Length: 372
Image (tube, rainbow, N blue to C red; front, side, top):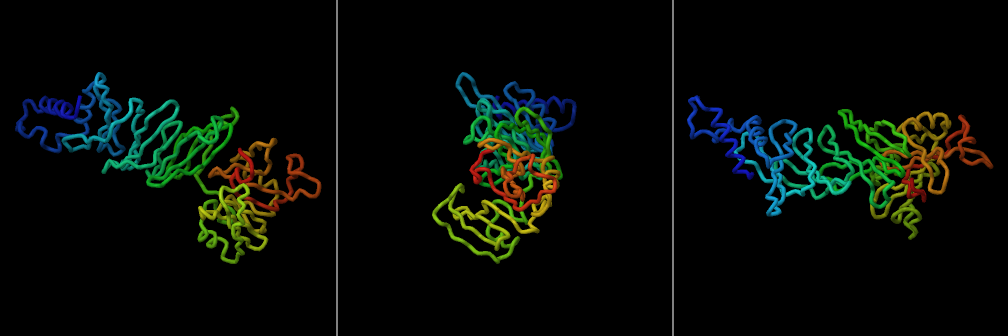
């Protein structure tokens, strides 16, 4: 059934409604009040060729699918019908595997999610113009909108890492790409909610152990410097009293050549020469502290009481648990190096409660020549 057929159904239902009334027949279907939510819904549900009827949050517009002619191998078509308007607008053809629509809370955007095997591909469409973003979300489940309708959170399997890897990512509308909250080996993530306070609830399944967790999608930092910050943001946090060492031609474990900023012996900041973003932060300054308030000089007991309830100390690909190193938001690694004394290694049975933190590093696992 096509748009004209749907309108005919609606008009027929309206004629039945006005039987015995004084309304002039020529006005049927010409007044905005004739196209109410209830009557549009009735028209859609009366058609056997219509499916996936999904109303916007404000109930002023509805998305639906209309099946094409199977014999002619015609595509399934997606339509948007606004209350008060005579006709629905064609959105686009979709695959036979479309899994449905998801509206943003402010009814300004919607997703078209199509399933291919075990993966969803979700397109973001602006409702008033039907313009579709270039960026498409690849995920293992349908993404969840943030309460402000500007971002989405979803789970994925990073293609470069293999099937035993999983990620929890966010995408902000009209941006060029997504950002990781988590990226981990032997882990599965399942999104539960994103609430008004900015908390993202999710289930983490790590090596078979299932745990309910909440993150605020924060950006970990040392002395208010974050991975991904610009030069200007570093100077705003630490000042301009640094010595810059230009790229040497060697990249080490970094993905690009780097500038090294030395703030005396207190901080070392590595900045990508191409990305112009902070790739690693190393701090030994006594007042240097993380976003959770742990400082250089604090006892190991404080580190573990603060971080272990929220974060994992992962297994290194080289073997053994990385004690004092935590997987934190942004798929980053936060590493507390303790003053172990001569001849001692950073093993759990050698880290005493009063052992002091002598250095804190915020980086990415791959920059540490590791993968976790």
